[in-house]
Image (cartoon, rainbow, N blue to C red; front, side, top):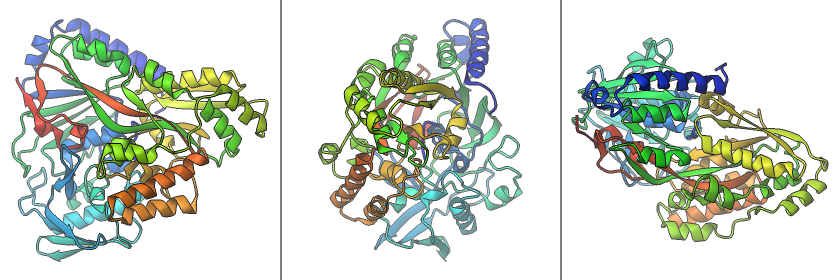
Length: 528
């Protein structure tokens, strides 16, 4: 999953981060010139949250994928338009969507200079399929997948059934990060600060401090050629104000996922450019019907009717999103048939519109007509979710439901998604591939975070993956959405956009909705 995903309170983290940043900012020149000069050849990226591991297979938050793109590759990659392109496989083909043949690039090297072998690739696939070694991403791989060498520089992957979208699985945007077998086996904890990570990308990991920083230097071994920066440094921020101060003082060059209410502040920094694009994301509420009282459809509908989507999008997000009527963003669902056709296909989906009288009526029919208490958590690195939660809580209070809102560090929040800990939770999912069925495939497939079991829905999800006709795929996906939304398993709120702030030192050469899902460090111009 790609959610915009520690025994410390979020308040304590924010306080410490703010004090540290304020101290650093006070010592830095106001224009950031001396600070920038001291970082010649380095691009510093400020991320809204932190990583507990460099191994994306263990933690699949969206910022993990952003980091993975500088160090790791799969057999295939994604280009600026969201199309599959060669990576470690120089070419591939499939005649029936069940047998996939990949020609391995003969000039591919790991960051230690060793050549990528067929054995390394097959080992990496075995790791990717193993739910114990890849707990966050093994679900990408259908049970029964077989991979074997089929030539000196070739492997063949055979699926148990045709899957037209399997090419996305073998990307570093999906579920495959090719590593060196000998390095992985020698690591006591692959991806940790002690062992780091070994990949084939343009930058190699040199240091990692969870909750603080990760540093990568140019590998000099990448088959894709040279890159502009010598060093890529990721700084982790649990407090958005601390990150804003760091950008003002010239300590960071790029700030990803800028909160809506800070866009104008970033735009006001001298030399900073803020670019906004759709990020093909979905945000909504998730109901686990295995947990009381959310096993009652009237309870689920009562809460869904208390969500004022229009006001959330216009007031909290300031229009930098669209009101969602389904779980698949139209530009994601329409990647093969067109955005308008996808929007038209989803136009008739059932949705519990904002109506507090309807919410009261549903609650009155439920097994808890007098109301109840519940909790809704959100990752502290996504403040827009916190504001949304408070708005929903205010509405629910009017119908007798007491909703406690609390924030958590993103790693902790991610670990609880789909775990059965809460009956009501947020889902913030940002697509990393161009697959039309990516969002629905995870939110409605067998391992979905709502723990929703519906044979018809999961049959449709399996069917769409095997469809070769794009329109038929969309029809299957939308029908699966219809059934789930009719049962109020998900309550869609918005389809999102993301804003990224770039200092005058760096310029993206091809900024699109897929920018950070490509080997993006190679697409930056660095002035000093």
